[in-house]
Structure formats: structure tokens, C-alpha cells
Length: 94
Image (cartoon, rainbow, N blue to C red):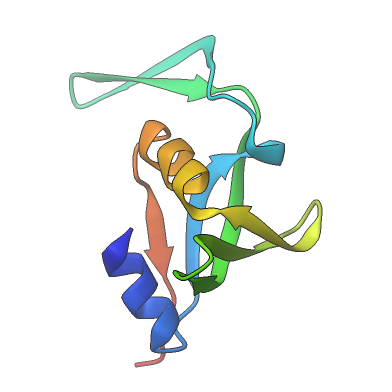
């Protein structure tokens, strides 16, 4: 998460995978195989944009397509992000 926050500090958007409404990650029964590895899908899988943070108050600012701009407890948010596989994409100009 520290690396992702450094991108946010540099005004680089970070898209990351979490769950809708911070729900507990839970696997579906669906699987797919790719190059010998099995992948599973989560219920309520969701993408948001990490757009700000306040370490003094332990919060992150999220642009959520379902809820708009919201603030989350940074520890709780990181825990769900970690449990969802730590998947993120940065968007920057060339």
C-alpha cells in the first residue's frame, strides 16, 4: 500500500480491486484455468480509484463508481485489498 500511496502523492491515479461496500471477500464457485493455474472469482468484486489519503487520521479517499467520493479507514481498506490479491493498475502519461 505504501507504494500505491506514493503514486497518489505524485498525482498518478491508482485503480485497485476491492469489494463493493467493503464487504468481506468471499469466493464464488466459478473457476478458470490459465497456464496450469486455477483462478477463482469473488462475490462483490469491485474496482475503485485511490485518490487521496490522510495518514494522521488513518484514512484513504476513494472514488467509487457506486458511492462517489468516500473515505475509508486505511487499515480496513488495506486488509481487504490484500485479501483480494493486491491487484492494482496505475495510469500515467508517457
